[in-house]
Image 1 (cartoon, rainbow, N blue to C red):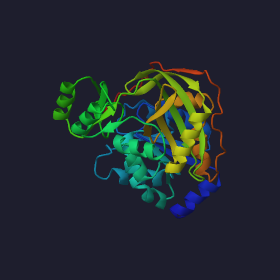
Image 2 (cartoon, rainbow, N blue to C red; image 1 turned 45 degrees about the horizontal axis):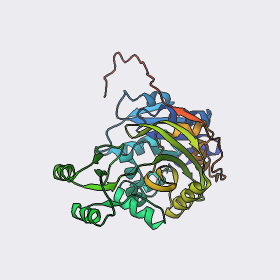
Image 3 (cartoon, rainbow, N blue to C red; image 1 turned 90 degrees about the vertical axis):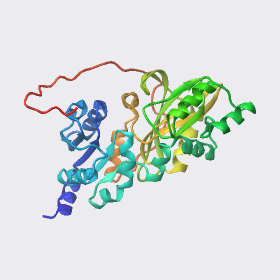
Length: 342
């Protein structure tokens, strides 16, 4: 029996296999997909370290090379063929562009990459370009400058003032972001590092939106908004569920107009009653468990799409005032006789 015939037989039988790349510490995401697939298929995970706890929550896992290594995608495609994977997604930023760029190779073997188009993913990781995308969609966003002289002219014109954020144009996890209060600090950072940008300081209340855009219809089907109470290392540590139809409408219009697909995470600020859009992460956000536990079921939406079913629109279908509080947990495993790969 050919591989294609085998795959069709499994799909016709109602089984669904999903591959989660770079699972790392995202145990809850793996757990949720296992719960939703409910024994009618398997969840396979990968990571480059056997000390990544999330891989042990999967039905099966593979240790793989780092994504920068030659032949990495070939290895992932081999796993997809061996495990008859129907859909694949990644939980880390650097891999999203790679997965989107190589999407056709996955589709050729009957595996759907759950990610937005490559050009759109690349824009998400370029903060200066994404600011332009927000403005083109009529959304408010922070003022941004790539050039120090341009920034100083804007200061002289009274358009911006210290403090400001200085950050890499392309970056994630809030790495190397500095609040700057003087010309001396600003010039010091620009002399030390390349590819920096200056961004208007965003005060006010920060919100996070977990959003799903149907991969078949292109409609925005789910939006969950949380008011961020406490942050740690760029991720939401404590939050409370929140609803606002005005914000829902802005998000829906934006994601559908730009053509996003699958799950994305958006950072937004409320400053004096006006919403400012800050960043888009085209993947599950670190605070997604809050949405799931409030009934916003994106794993089920993914499974429906992989089965060829469009999802119904359920935007804002959750209770407000529900809090998420992250806390420390540990996994203990006997690794005697196993080489540790940090």
